[in-house]
Image 1 (cartoon, rainbow, N blue to C red):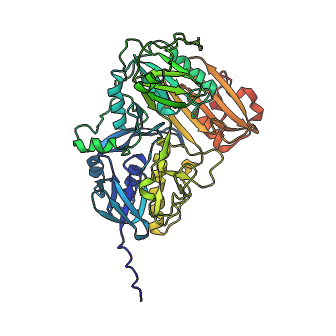
Image 2: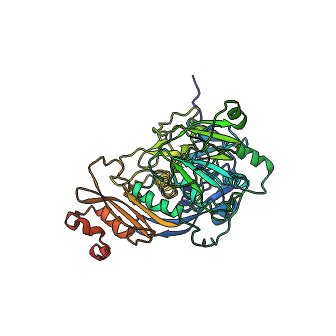
Image 3: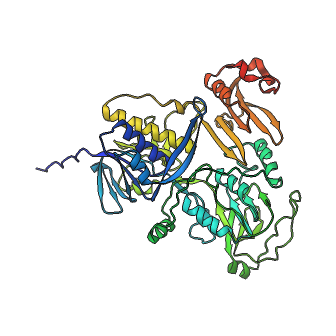
Length: 503
């Protein structure tokens, strides 16, 4: 007769990942179960903490993200124990997780918040840098000090920020869309922002008052570990503050945008010379798109784009999005995965394996979403998911039921691009609405850009760039789905104080 395997001892709450989702989840569990030990496993010596949290409206929230040594978290929550080690293996049938330091931890409930890693345009090329975490930013800064020209590939938030912040270095920016910032904007908003790129020296920057902890000064081996593709947590919304992003030259912005193209091939200098190919000089005139001048200079690396143009540069920044970091957990476990490779979670943040939850960039929301919410791998969602996952874990542990958190009713994100405040609400880019929608615009050059997405007389989404003070009103209009047909174009008339109407 086979002896039944003893069930694992009732374990602890274990959270994997020291980014925003993981830290928020651990904090919330620590508050819910003050007499239980909460384990937070993280591969990095620093964790990400939410600071200066501000609830802007019902759903919109603003906060800073700060790197802190894990001791600060342990001091604030005596029942959180941080273990600095990567995960070697997850044995879900035994409710047990093995860490690189040789230990194993039995869990009763586990939340995986291991984030995502950058999608690199090509692996193992010394001239291609992926920017995602603090280590890669420091490496980037080091390389930039000697750079005369770099190429940025990608059209998301990090690419947008980089292009704006880099000074004294020629930037060739290759995007696969017609307009910049496609993830966040339509062509009109892109145009509004691009004028700021070409403008001369911008207003002086406001100094950030906040301490920064870096991973500098940690043992050498950690550096090497980080090099071999260990995943750091993602960067904060103002990650470039305090970095000196200056190249060698004395000018301010010099940017050339190549649209509708991707990287076809990358050549190293020697290979390029042997193939006797020709590369293009940096286009002299912003308006003269047809610069055919051959580049006299020799560069360490050359990029051939799918539009047949070839440019040389000092190095390439790959800012082409992220892939959920599920790899350490898949072996031997039968997780359902989303199309984007994330761990599928239901409306209680549960994966397909009992007692395992997931939150943040690693997961793929697989519930039927509200008509004005979509998942995007952003800070705000990492925080909301981490918080809600902890609530769900607690409820399940106590045998309670819990309703879906209100923050998933409406997509709402506030950020800064090119020094403008940017608020995105609902289906701000008419995502999934097909051709059955109309747009209303109001734009004051250099000041504000307002776009509203309407469907059947109801507001479905909005983009607000600049200090518009309309976010709360618009949030309410999208949430209550009031019929606005009778207002027509008057909805955005600057002479009508729309807030008075809808308070």
